[in-house]
Length: 212
Ligand SMILES: Cc1ncc(COP(=O)(O)OP(=O)(O)O)c(N)n1
Ligand SMILES: Cc1nc(C(=O)O)sc1CCOP(=O)(O)O
Ligand SMILES: [Mg+2]
Image (cartoon, rainbow, N blue to C red; front, side, top):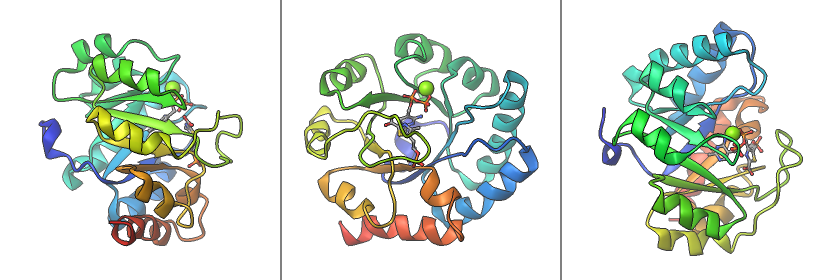
């Protein structure tokens, strides 16, 4: 699939954990995909360049037959090299326009906007396909993430891009975010730290039905 509009723009946006073993990474991700993931982000803050390339390529091979887009965190060059479906850029991760030039018009380009609406307006102008805000709740994965207020979500909808919420999201608090205007819920811990990750995926997906 190579058209931006063809990807679903509502649902669970699953981010991978810092898993050093590639076979184990795939074994952890596969049941979650099976349970229903709209987008997958490859994120491993502890991996070497070589390992990130290996893991990103392995996830792409896993996701292609399932039509789940793979977005590479931090590194648009790696995304371009591997023909991934997109890249996610935070404040330290380079320029959206450069990423767009390298990845092409159909790539899914995301921007971290934290708790900063003006940053989201700039990112939308610079061609971001989705805007991510957070952290909405305390995150075990990223305990020092700056916190964002729920009131950002309805405002962000006016920017005309899918709105992603991130940070400490669980099946318990997810309906609040969806009701406030989040199109996608970006999650790591509530899935990968769960005793039953597939059940956690299903519970997170339920929040889109209960808040519709
Ligand atoms: C969907 C989504 N939202 C936010 C982030 C965070 O990006 P960044 O601030 O660059 O932090 P790191 O993830 O690189 O630690 C994200 N990755 N994905
Ligand atoms: C990677 C990341 N970025 C955040 C932000 O606020 O920008 S919060 C976060 C961690 C998300 O993991 P969990 O679902 O385990 O809280
Ligand atoms: Mg980053």
